[in-house]
Length: 129
Image (cartoon, rainbow, N blue to C red):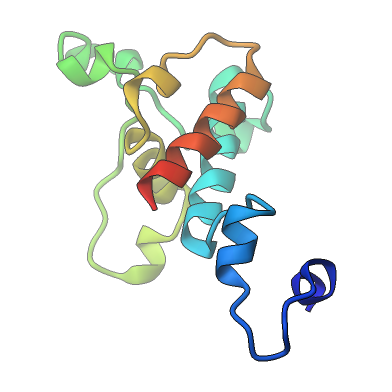
């Protein structure tokens, strides 16, 4: 409703194109990936509470996996789950999955460049969809 009011979109007009092209809002699934990836970034930087930081375990931290290519690419360990949908939606699974799906350049971005990371994240999500 707010988009219709701000953009002067007709009552039965489509707002999705206006939201994406003019307001630069991400579609719903990509907005979820954006929020989860931003939260995982806070966990990796150590800015999140300890109970969330435990859910984002880098592969480099696991002793027997330090020589894998995924450890060089700053990937996170995705725990094994059954096919239950609720388990796949948990942050312990959805967070590392979303993080590992990001481009390597974003994952390797230096600590402290949050604005650059969020800008690059939004750009990469716009390019996907």
